Image (cartoon, rainbow, N blue to C red):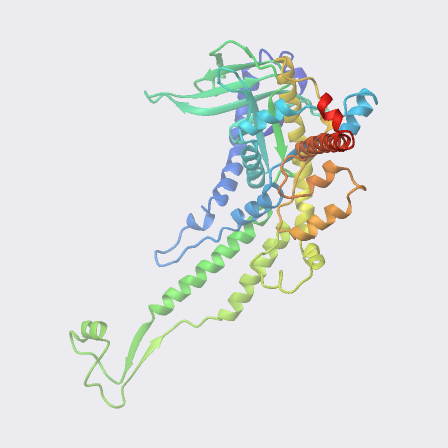
Length: 473
């Protein structure tokens, strides 16, 4: 979660007052009730399973919360995020005589070694569920430490910013309630500032006595190494505004199935006859009764219900849930049919706008991560400083494509658009900058081979015209 605190309350972030730590954790414990309910709904543990009722009632949950989050996540993060150097921005910053290419290899190598796309998806998933997420940048425990990232559940992470309009970071806390083998419970807190990391421990929040359990350790990231990602300006989850609709749909489907069950268990009533002792068991077993009077009859007492009306209501609830979350219903037969590509784009317009809002929010955090990694590698002497303004963060929407049409488009724009941008449009190219370098190297090798062949052909022709030249050689 994200908290805002007057900077005057923490004049020295390297020596935090105990009452500030207690205030932060109390705020987090209050917010965890909301976070816990959102996480519970995503996992399918809806309120319908916790309400009182009789044993005969059927209870089911249709997990639209998970559907909404997962389909949005796959739409804008199904393909990994790409990072392309922008040579034009670099030359504008450093001058026209600067090198035309930025070397991002050390930093991107750190991304590849930890499969950073998995961390990105975990961050996006948590954003979609709870409305915000934190990321911790840290040095790995390897012999040769490398910068790494981990998604932090907002229930266990607190980023504290000042109350200025820029909301500059003051410090960050990672906390948890832990227990010793003897049963003693305590709060374990790790504090991150722009220079150091330090661990604290407290038995309870009433005394507010947080004792340091380790000396301050430098982290070399140059800023508070905790990044906040917000799902939207309100910090709401993707399905948070439709939770009442989800509850209504769960209740409707549960009542529907309960009515079906009671329909099967209908009462059998006999008119004009009575069953002798023991015939009830015989009827239940053999489904047959003998010796009934001619004017006797048997009927079931059933509860009547309007199945068509219930279905109309269920479909209306589903439409409202998709409309309020800006997601498409892929199971709707009217979604595709024989519609043209342009018509499908119009149907995806609302979802595309939602994805762009998410991308805009997430791009800020990814650029901040880039800045932290670059500072760490620069301090270690493995990379030179690179401004995030010289790097393009590229998101690829995960949709089925017409491969032949995409190749034809790239081919037709040859000579109009630069090669790196064109190669980035091809779905099978992961690193457009590397593809451009390989293309240039291939052209050089082909040019050298062509020159060598031309030289050999000229030599052969000269030898044929002057046989003595071969003997001189």
